Image 1 (spheres, rainbow, N blue to C red):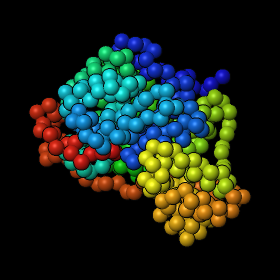
Image 2: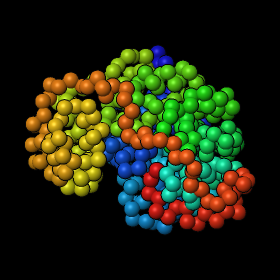
Image 3: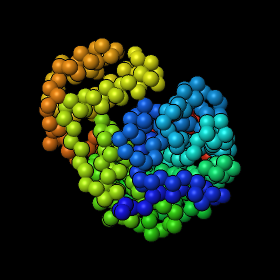
Image 4: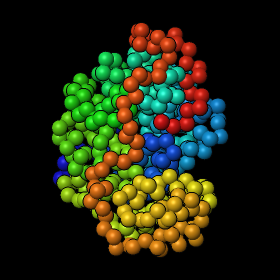
Length: 384
């Protein structure tokens, strides 16, 4: 018997809009969760795999880069997209395009991005402070998606900082607007990716709303996900940095939620094969040269802790053809065991607290935001 029930995401007009058999979600990551990476993760396990963040304005204005990001693998039976925006009408229009023209089955909204270029204009993780603006965005998006029976979820943080928390109010607003589920990243915007994710806050939100709550933060191994569910009562988990260079984590997660204990510790040869498979999928999406150029950013994540050697690492970080790639991978000792130092170790961004969060002047003065001029808030935003 599964340890955790399937995750059911309902649109207001459809109680069975989307059922995720294994309650695990691939968190959208800018420049990472493209169609190739999503397919690679899906080959390993089960769950919901979300496209990297798309800006609503870019979509409505038919920006070429935004449209290019909306590429899906033929194997993706469920099309899931994260949408970013600050204007209710534009968010509704963008959602209509996603559902009507791209056949999207699930829309997630980003209210958690801590990147200064986003927050200083009133977007991402600082927007939920403006309760009325948040409510209008959610109502507009849910209304547009519900015409197609598509569920809408949101991802947010605990608050801007310890003194300006909003997650409980955001949960209530989301529930009232017909949002299907809320994912809580257990940190404030000021904390960014530092400190431990606050599971107490997740547990409090679970008790505060009746819609499903997902937990996000510090899931490096499948056991971390089970602990989070047990300690907080969340309906599932969202995994981001923990799967960087480790798509097999989704295999372990699927097994864990099915009651099977699995810890995949691939040899260097098996990691090399996975790395090459990632390159193949990227090449199929972008072409060989561009795809392998994109693969370069994954080198450090895949080979973290392995005795690869500086010259091979540098070569992999400059690879532009499969001939070069295969030559470099052939020089590795395929029998080297997975390094103990990499088991359960954090990946991706860590850093330190941001201190003062970049926000529009006077942002914290009140919680009303419908009169704010946020016309520049989506300029230059292509992920987060």
